[in-house]
Amino acid sequence: MRSRYTSGMEQRSSPVSPAGQLERALDILELLARSGTQVGLTEIATTVGGPKATVHRLLSTLQARGYVAQDPQSSLYSAGVRCFELGSLWAQNLDLRAVAAPYLVRLNEETDETVHLAIYDHGDVVYVDKLESRQPVVARSYVGRRCTATCVATGRALLAFQPTAEIRAVLDRPVPPYTDRTVTDPGVLAEMLADVRRTGYGVNHGSFREGVGGVAAPIRDHTGVAVASVGLCLPEARFGADRFDELRDRTVATAGAISVALGDAAGLLARA
Image (tube, rainbow, N blue to C red; front, side, top):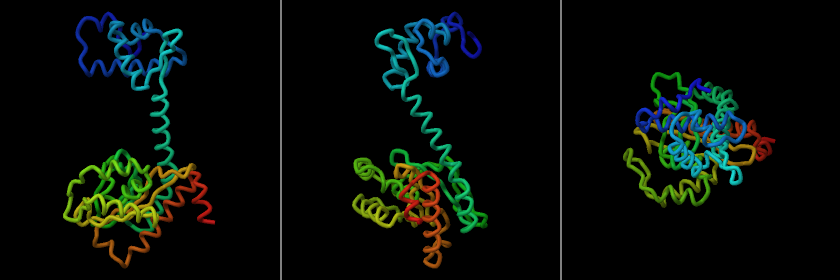
């Protein structure tokens, strides 16, 4: 079997760079994931190329991280549970975007403001989808952007519903003063998150970018867990008291509709 794998004879001729080691580790994972059965060390080394000792070290590292499992009786290897977890997370996020898409479009059309779909990641939020406002002045952003959760509405809407230990860990970290309106005091931030839990939405007024505000609400899955947030991001000049109630209500309603589409029973009861 050669296809995409390099032969062992070719690999032994020169030292393997760190990038080459990474490529070999990925080859191992792909081999185990596609094999459907347990595979021995000799077969793995022959297939992906490289000395058995080197391949064994890579397998040991992958095993320690849960990406590879070894049968204690036969010593054969198979793909570990972490491979499944990563695949499941990817599928979950893909499904989330697909389910949320029509609701994001409607919110964008109703408000003519930039709409974000965000997920939580270790004290940050990451935008996984975005629809931009058609107005001449907009708050620029992009899919894949990472923002400090305590400083943006989408982040506050998600951080507020994380486990208590996670919230404490995040609040213990220093917050960079992105603007002169950035909230850095952990006590004040804790109160803001409590307000989010009470009201069901988060707000930001220039805490991350000067002159940019937003409002966001959590999206819950079929288990009731907040898995994402949907938010509006717009210039502060269009985020005054005259529009706040409308923008908040439409955002909260959109989050609720997406939650119901994901199977959130509580959201369904709330709409009944």
